[in-house]
Length: 168
Image 1 (spheres, rainbow, N blue to C red):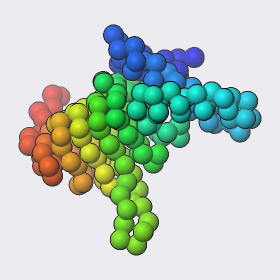
Image 2 (image 1 turned 180 degrees about the vertical axis):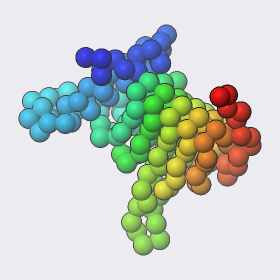
Image 3 (image 1 turned 90 degrees about the vertical axis):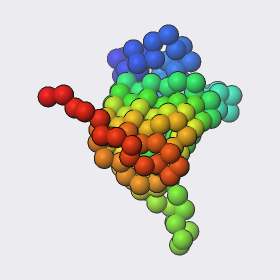
Image 4 (image 1 turned 180 degrees about the horizontal axis):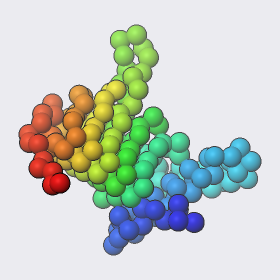
C-alpha cells in the first residue's frame, strides 16, 4: 500500500499531483501481471483518458520513476516511455522528456535522470543523455547533452551555469 502513496508527501497541498501519481503507481502495479492487465483493463483505459486526454499529462504506465516525484502544474507534461527518473525529482508544466529520431529512422534511447533533480517549466530534455544527481534545470532550457551532478543548467541550448556547493 505504501507503494501507491510514495509520492504523497512530495505533493502535499497539491491534490492533482497526488491523484495523478497515485493513479500512475496503480497502473504501474497492474502492469506487472498479464492477469491484472486483463482484469483491470477498464481502469487502464480510464487512466489514459483522464490523465492523458483530460489533464494533458503523458506518463506511460511502463515508465520507470523513483519515489517522491513532485508534479507542479502538470499540464502539457510529456514523459517518454523509455525515460528513467530517479528519486525525489520535480517536474513542472510544459516539459518534454524523450528520445529523438536518428538519421537512419531509428530512435535514440531516452534520457536518464538522477536523484533530486529539479526541472523547471517549459524544459525540453531529449536524446540519449544523462542528467546527474542534484541538478537544477532552469525554465525554458533545451537539454541535448548530459549534465554532470551538482550543476545548474539554463538556456537554449542548455549550458552549465554553476556547480552547486555540496556539504560534507
